[in-house]
Length: 299
Image 1: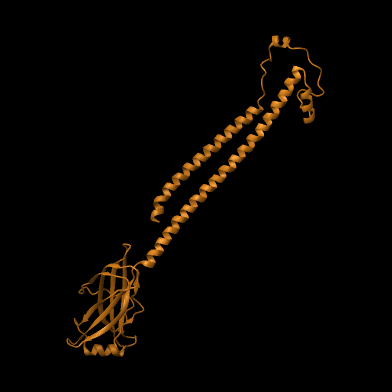
Image 2 (image 1 turned 90 degrees about the horizontal axis):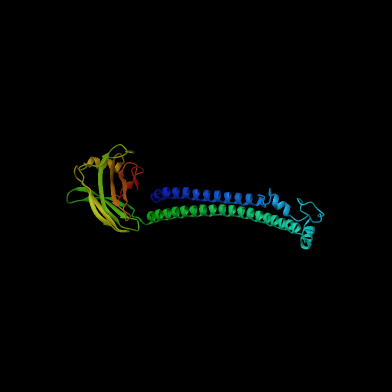
């Protein structure tokens, strides 16, 4: 949406400008059509009205026509009479008929042209709207495709394995937590902070990290690569009675932590995990840690 946030204001301004241009164009067409139609209906002045000298100079009236002067004869009579007209007044009347006929045809053509232009304008508006819609749809499709590609290709760090390993030389146990990149691109600035907590009561909420523990930095973890974080359980060490309670399922040892990293697209990611030994989980002979139902989430 970051692209569209910059595109939408510009598009809204272009919409308003397009509407103003189209509106002005339609108004101009209406004005021109009105003027043209008005001119065709305007009667012509021969310039001889009210001139006594011109009236006296007129020749005598010709033989009366078989129809009134202000009434146009049928098409066939009009054409045949005009072809055989010999008197000046008859020829003038025929010429007026021809001009009136031409004016009517011109008015009809102008009207048809006007409505054809209106239809073209509406088609143009539809085409512009379709083009804008297609551009927005293409922009959205590109954004969705990019987001999908990032999700498919980015790094995903998660726990691959967790065990408790006895150390006989120091008579203590340490936790080995293997973190693997299950994505298709490297993970950068990888940091893992792992802690342990012994309790006789199950914990379903958040467990704060051990402030005495220092996070271990791994730098870059490539695709399918893994690293192991080791947490010695000797400070404080568990007593023999506590280990006995763990084996009996009356106590729980939580091994938990958080991995933070940056993916190939520059986004900060995290993985929080929680493993357990004892409690209701199955006690494995090789002391493999079980995954808790709570406390596991990732970005």
